[in-house]
Image (cartoon, rainbow, N blue to C red):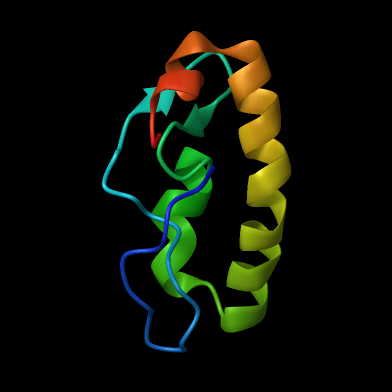
Length: 77
């Protein structure tokens, strides 16, 4: 399960970062927040709508990552 977020950004949309910054090459996602490297790098430039769109994808990404990768299954729990 994705833990509580760290802090809200300037627009009020909370970053999904959990300070577990490890990329899982099996699934191409961070094992802490389940974002791609491109999304992490671009996050500060995203508007609120784009941030919400990414956040909406995270629960399904987490389920897929945990099913496919032991590394993703061990973080954030």
